[in-house]
Image 1 (cartoon, one colour):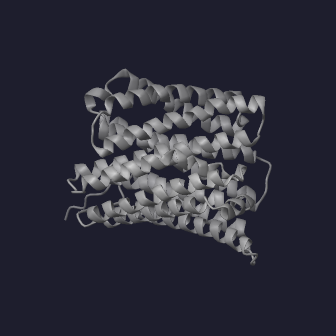
Image 2 (cartoon, rainbow, N blue to C red):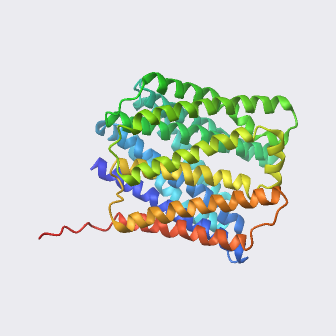
Length: 408
């Protein structure tokens, strides 16, 4: 019953991912064919909140319950109450952000979500008490989630007292940094290491510990990379560069871990493809952060925000995080890619994400180098966003199609 409930929770989060992608498609439509039917700002807020909280956060919570929390512990009412409350609040956010944007109702829902997620986080920290590297990664991921959430409360104070100043944007970046590079990265790799342990894949414990140490030491100072746009102090660039180098070292260690694991994997072609795809995206993310510590790229990224910064955000959320989650769900046999429709869906999704990144960064570099920009850029982005949506619909719907047993 608990396994079935966790699977339902994760499929619900996958549905939210589909809806978030549809919101993203509507945003692209608004660029290609401007309309005032739906507020762009409201749509953007709905898209981002549902993607982070409905897909990323909720899917990972479901996976943690499957992998790290015993059936007996899951019977605790805290899990039942908090998860049901989170499901309801996220569903209401789908409507509230579109209808009224970041106003009273949406703020109330986010506040409820925040308080309830605290209760859930502390319960997880109590129940995930192992000493392995995978357990440590999960616990620190939860710590970083709690740190990131502090920005949501402080943000209200900043808006009331100062408005949308530099402090406002740096507070938003504080939230995103510790959510992305803290919670999502640590929890995702903790889950991957746990899966490899369960599959009896032999990996050097020393390498896993070193990966955790370098990644952890880099996390807090790496926030500086997010605020370089608001200062010319080279000391901040130095701190950011140091943090980026630590992340680069952790990436090298990660590749050594994956090299050891890969030769032992008994995964199918799609799982291996998803692993390679997400790891390339993660490596590009690290390289992008290293480049962002250099003053030249800081100024250019700001000037070309619609391309480089948006490209980076999608590189993380789609090419790395989402692909990684799909890989994990496939390994846990929560979703399947055996059916033709699901395979087509994965292909369309991966191509859509790849073309999106190519368009965003290519247009940015063409403008940076003062070369001819891509013609019909917004229309092309709309087309590749359509691939993403169709791919996700195929993946989601295929999970409810029963495989026919052909008896000869």
